[in-house]
Length: 286
Ligand code: URA
Ligand code: SF4
Image (cartoon, rainbow, N blue to C red; front, side, top):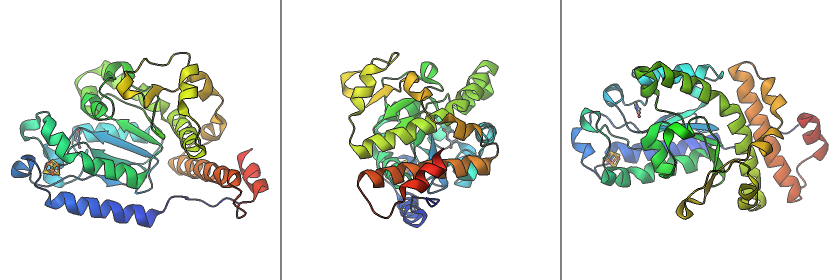
């Protein structure tokens, strides 16, 4: 059998701890003056899904943990509806210290803090990143609009983005809450697209050839051509049945690990790695 978790838990978790340690001492921007605690992020070092918010609020500043206030409770509800557990994903923010009075972080603050998020993404290497709200989405691609992008699947480098409204928008207004509840359900499809994106990136396939054939690809600006809406028709070819069978959070996790292992095994077969047994791979796939 292809064995479970292909990502190294130890090395990712060491990297994340090292980042959190640097963040805890960081004074690169003025938010250091007013914070109570830094809020580096938390969750599984091998998460396939990473949620990214804007920055800590009051409850997060007091506890040092992301999304623990009212918006966080709503985020928990969304994650559980998949079903997944909060511990299965990773939750971070663009800025790691609270902007006073919950104002938006300033451009310079975001710029000073950006390396930490970049390093976290690199350490975790998730299949799917879910930017929460306009500011987080802007960090990844300023040309996308949050309302129009909610629950849509976009290729982003060797993974996918699936933006959602900020959970606090869902607390303010029931139609936003409905958009969030509907949007999060595209995550299973996003995971499958993420698996495909990884495989293509490893195989060195030019993702552009897919983007050009996308029937409803969003026109992106030249500067942001790393990103295009994933083609719907292509997504339908995915082995969706595998995810439909997963009913519990444990089964969803197991299914994702299996998919990831299959993807890595396929890559190893392509590179003629003798360690991989092709028949086993097929047996677990079909
Ligand atoms: N809002 C955010 O964007 N991040 C948090 O961690 C909490 C609230
Ligand atoms: Fe450092 Fe980021 Fe906190 Fe600014 S917000 S002090 S850059 S950790």
